[in-house]
Length: 435
Image 1 (tube, rainbow, N blue to C red):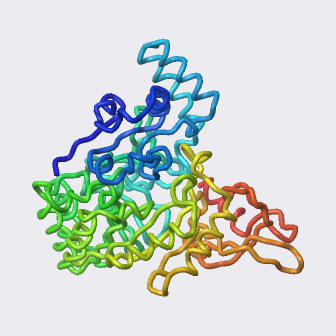
Image 2: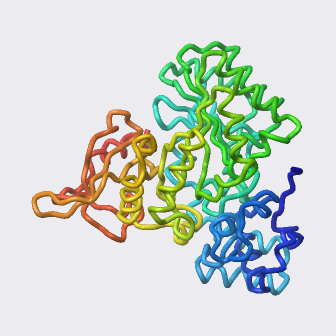
Image 3: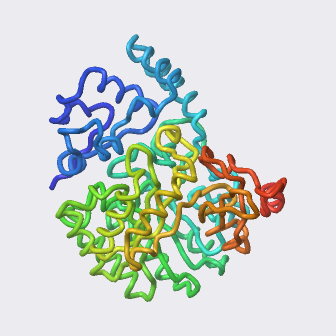
């Protein structure tokens, strides 16, 4: 299949778009002027149910919806578009709205970017001791954009230093060499699988040639299996990309392909099934993850079906996340208690081989905090929590407790249980962030 993209400037050329009303089209244009919009012919032709597109999860996952913006912001942007305002005015208003949507959650810019020899590495994040994130400059886009994406500022034209990207492979090698605690390198984006195999191999070869003994695993964060499985089937360099995966495993490093699947529909096509097998044949392990999303997958039966299908295809369910406090969170977010209820009910519907999944987890400033469950202690109803990962690794697996709150959607909304003033990590975290 030949890859074809649709964005704000050409989405009306999609053959199925004639099913949409004028109001639908305006909604896409208004929201798409603020939040990034991009889809492709595979999503349009093979994933979306156009007979029921307004309720279809794949349509909502790709096409901006009116309620993804606050009403006043939507109306202001609609007014500008309908009055044919100039591009500069529209962009200025879009940036004002974007700034209100928390474009950099969890301290991505302030606290996660490390330095090497006094130089800030803007294409790197090193939040957790063993894991370093790398954003190659050629991978700062995706085959299609998820409307919930927490890295949505990567794909907008906001002013300022908001994009994570780096070209210099030598700096990556030098940083990993210096930090012997790093065992895992996560190559992310955007989506590194938009890169040509030749470009991707430049980084991989440099890393492998460095022969860094303490680096054990290379992770690849990608939505390509969902949005463009033909990347591994019919692209001119598909076999070359797969050969790179095999080269990594043959060099004695583990490859973890971190696949993003948000709904069972993404697992239904022959193309994705074939692509999964091709990747597994290289020796790579495919782990799956997704946030729990209102309007998309906020039901236990959907998650149970998704985990079962992933296991059937030889993938390992890995994470259920809670939608981050950024972008269209008001549209996609659900309370943490409801997220846990969905997780727990889905967990009971699958066998042990699918219970590798962890969650629901919030990737927040202090770390990855898992909602363990709701219970009662000494007559007080509480939410039990624990760190999966923390800025201080010693925080991991330590249970702590929050007051029961059926409306809280993020850790910042939760209060300590049993009359406490702060959670156990907060004082140390404040000191860490001042450094």
